[in-house]
Length: 322
Image (cartoon, rainbow, N blue to C red; front, top):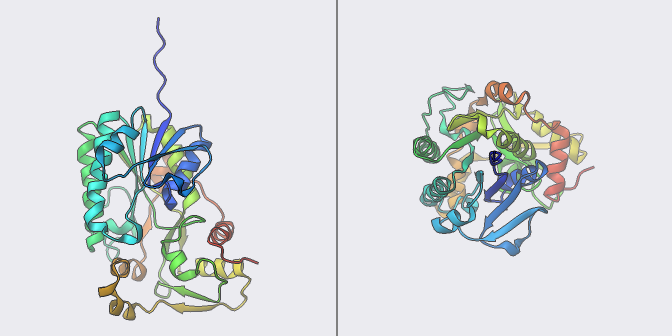
């Protein structure tokens, strides 16, 4: 009698040079997966143990070809600097859905809190209604709706939702755009949030490890699955600032509020700033993710102590630490 074929442990990572893709690829390698990465520039450098293929996510045949034999496709790709985001993200996702249908792979998508209205939902579980207030959020809702619809038509998926990312390889985020400046000593900490308002952060190596643990057990999941990642919950907006100050050796840090009122002046000339301005409500209202479903499934949520996570992030961004 012929033994049943073992499930493939081949993963395709899209967006492998970005923060989520980089850390998820590394975690999958640690978990024994054979990892391919489809990138526009394979010569850009990469992770040991990852095979880099040249291609563009906007080219569906290239994604379909790269996904042959894969069990999962990590869809962690975004246009750099948010440029053309609203025009490109849905076609990118459609390429991945087509590849999942052709290969039988499950799509793994990093989700965001932008799908929700922060003014009405301070604690969000996987069943909370998605009533996005922003254009970016509405597109995110549409992405998840497309995945849910595709799950009934041969393209299984898994969404792992997390707060604002930070990590050693991620420079396009709030941590590296205000709290610190890559390549420079910390002198002033520019914090985007209102005083006393909680904020959700997600350390990218922990997110990558969570994706890998879920990937190891994806066969136990329904065709469409969502999980929420709690990460670092800064209850009053001071924990992250204090951790940065400790890492930089500052006893009396110069903490300033981001001048939101001035950003609209530059917004018409800068697409990245226009996208960031939409995120203002998430710094005015506390929005925390309920991770009980994730913990019930995995037994725990991977969690790096905050001080260590901040030090490793600053080192990765070439910010001096004490």
